[in-house]
Image 1: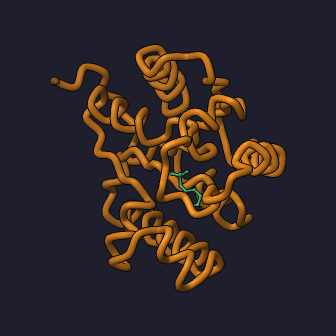
Image 2: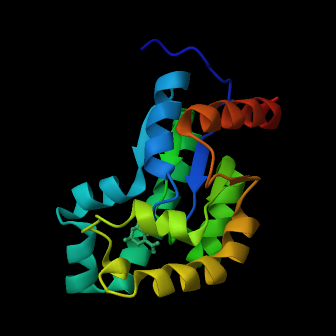
Length: 187
Ligand code: S3P
């Protein structure tokens, strides 16, 4: 499909944040097709760099190590895109990227940050078959997602420029909403 919705982001990224199962990767792919902007998936880059699945990094090195890798990658992306001027990309983040204040700062200043706020039952359904999410490898996924939703909502709110309550919005309808908001943001 030819891109039909180009956006002049002035060399800056569109960044997608939200809990596991909120649609960052799926919507990121669609937005990438429609705008012609390349998609960067932070979790995939970390897996490639380390040569291990996220779940294995959590198991072998611990969550703290994974969080340090996330921050290092964000710093690298920010420096690299500023220097190269090639920052017109879509960045799909891991759900916990907002946990550190420094990450929230970097995200907010680097580009246009879109937060997919999705209700817990929808998150539960969308993550039900996931095997590669270490934080959800437990029978009480509903309780875990409820807690993460409560704890992280203020953190997503701090990092984001746009909150989309997207539990009941289709991908087809979400992409134009982001497109319109991004045009205004970068105008
Ligand atoms: C995490 C979310 C995951 C991944 C890791 C930790 C989290 O990414 O980064 O398992 O803390 O919410 P997705 O949001 O893409 O599943």
